[in-house]
Length: 329
Image 1 (cartoon, helix red, strand yellow):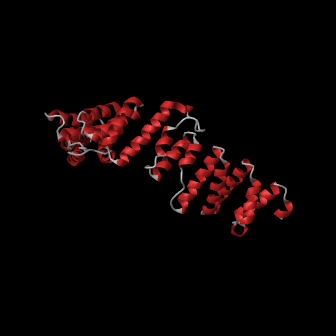
Image 2: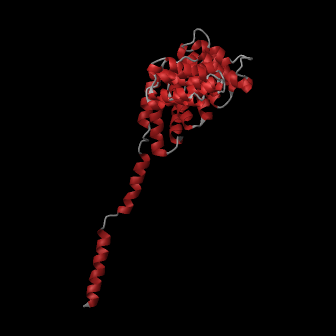
């Protein structure tokens, strides 16, 4: 009886195994289907090519396509292979479709950091001198690679062919490149002309451009020339920030009269107590370093009725500092 039950049990196991669905066998067709599935980037690629054909491709336009490829593959190679296949199918170079593919390639590889491939794509496009966008991108790539001679030549050739806003940006960049070429030998005393300062000081330059150039000059360690260009303009908050800049640059350039006046205006414009205290710190320090504390005390006296609590505290501190204890009380 025991032997019979054992054989029946064994037979049942064999029957179950024989009739069980072969799930493992199904894995292989599923894998093949996944491999044959259309890449996730194909639809956005075709949409982008249709959009930029006859025009150009911006970094923002290429971003969704780049992201689709990276999400699926984690690298750009599959998309580059697809683009190369599209180029191989096109018999005519410089056709609208060919240009669209190359513009997309250039932007994708620039974002990917494969600069050499991006440069090759834009260089091929730039053989058509009417493709201003490709020539500009190629110049920027030369610039990004530190090949300043090639970039400078390309920028200068583009100046008469681009719109006014782009030309202004290129002129600023050219001035900075001239400044870099000259090195930090340019001093802040005005003994030698500064290309960026000379360019930004032109009468036709906008106030915004002059202010941006001034900030760059200050970052380059030339606060004196920054002061000469900069104007604090706009709504009160922007003017407050601008006056603080002028005060800080005035201190750095040891032009304490500039720092003192700018700090006083910043105190008047400060929207909150914390920012007012910082402006007052600059105000006091610029007068101390400029040997003009008595003039500041006199100014406090003249404007006593309008002083904030923070300004009154500084007034008392300076009176004590100059040993005018009776007046401080």
